[in-house]
Image 1 (cartoon, helix red, strand yellow):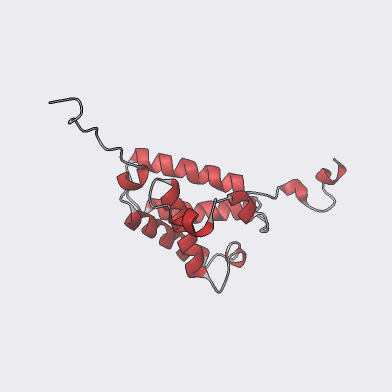
Image 2 (spheres, helix red, strand yellow):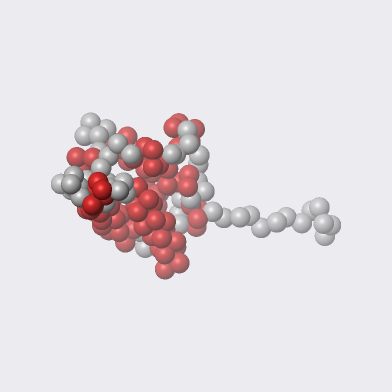
Length: 145
């Protein structure tokens, strides 16, 4: 076999490894099933565009994990912190988001390695979106800095 005729193994993305679009559709649908009924999180979402919110999250996650680049084609650079800046996201909102996402991840039947990879990212992302801390309250110590 010549050097030029030998094919390299194809690189599989995490998106492919976990089942592609159907897996991310299940994850995001299960997540939003909980968020829609959550008294802490529901008010942060566009009440007249739940389907749009679901599509945006699903497209973002698919792209992040090596799937189609639909998110960037439609919305440009993700700029997640900028897009979330208008919403007050403190520990309560972060933890509620993580609880619904945890319930959704648990339905996917991923391998332990896949679950750890996905969950590690989701935890990091949730913590990165937090933009309010307990000492941000009016009159708190942060006002003295």
